[in-house]
Amino acid sequence: MLKLTQTENQILCVTNFEDLVGTPFHGSTNVICWSRNLIGDFAEIVNQIDVHDNMVELHTDELLALQLSVQGQIARDILLNDLKCLEAQGASPTLNLIKCYEIDDSYPFFPTDVYSFHVDRAPIESDTILCTYYGETSEILPNAQGIQKVLIPEIRDELKKLHDGSE
Image (cartoon, rainbow, N blue to C red; front, side):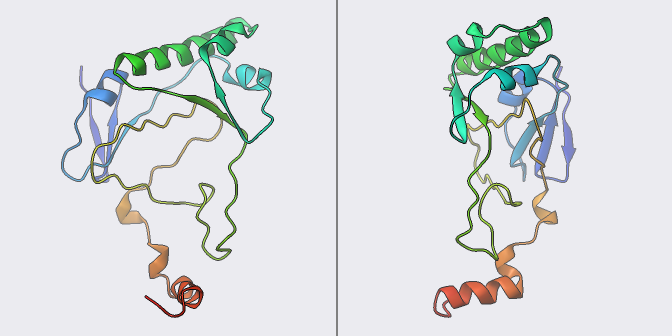
């Protein structure tokens, strides 16, 4: 059963995987969200993975090798099932455990890293699916509620200084 909820024009919400991958974009929609309540202990998986760098890709065999409680096994089954569903759609999914992102301080007055609020605009449909299983999720902000930083006079002035006054 297709149950769609349209919020703030660009954001379309669905209730299952089939609708997530099968619903075409229409009108001004540029993101489709599948909000779900995940069960299981994803923290148990995270705590068993050694992350030496800021990010590590998790492979199926590594997940299967983990010794987990019943709740950890439920979480692992969800991860493995999601990967399987994406592969069945022809996707090449990767599962990453991200400890932290690099902070971009090249423009101290204008952060360009993923820690800052930023705009991902998809004028055409994309094959990118972002999912958070553990930790804080991404916030979705409709375009109409965002302000382009380049239009903020103080930031625009600083950018002009960096680029010899050029617009």
